[in-house]
Length: 343
Image (cartoon, rainbow, N blue to C red; front, side, top):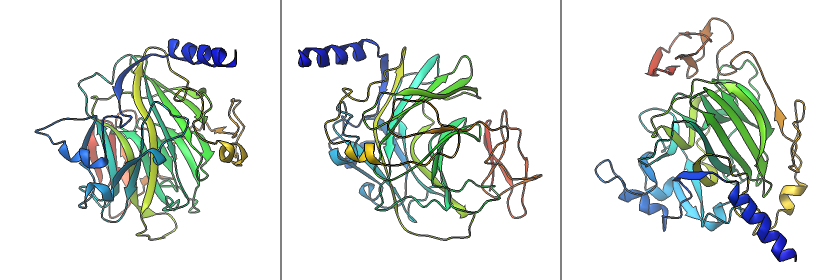
């Protein structure tokens, strides 16, 4: 009877799921070296691979079943993305990013951008630096980690933050070896974004939003990976490599699938259940075992205090209401219609 109930629950989860219109779960790759077969002249596979450093692909991207959320039984493997002082692409920023390779329209109607992510204490991301994670080129929504450029408080910030138009809307203390599952719910017609979240094998729960945003994508400007700005608020310098882990990456239309993999874990979740995460704001009711927090602010935390934006901070773009002039030594440079940056 228990088996029948489990099967029924699983089928019910599938029945409520939408349609996967782009699948980035790495099931079509035998290893990360398969990314080398992609080029502008040979656009094959699930990902475009061009934003990375000068080393071999295995210096920056590696695949393994050990790198995925154990609860994600629909993925054969996850990805470890590495940034270091060789991972520079057209700038002094550290960058390793993968772009969807697809003919599907990833910017119409209401879509759900799914991914799970975690960090480890080995090659841990440095919280002294601003990291822009899983972002669109216009940065209308993204995750951020570490000290955010322009903040007057120079202390490291260990919060993983969900940002909308440069404003922190939700955050959680990002402890090691806890898988966080996310979905960006993006209403491209209504110009709103909403965050769904859970940990471990727990189903996704609507956590924050909807919030107004300048939603726009050409279906090839969502970046799976991380961009680290060179400036550090505390003046800290570091050349140590950082590792970031992702799994369960796909884009879905229709209704959202809240089930992580089959909805059950293929590995132990004891560590997740026993991990303590500090909340700094009012807790959001969820079904997860780790408290998460929501922060709604009215000023962009990524912009500088006062009339001048800090170097590497946003300084313009459609819908931008923060500082538009830059501190001495940098110039407000238009990267696209939605994002200008002090460079």
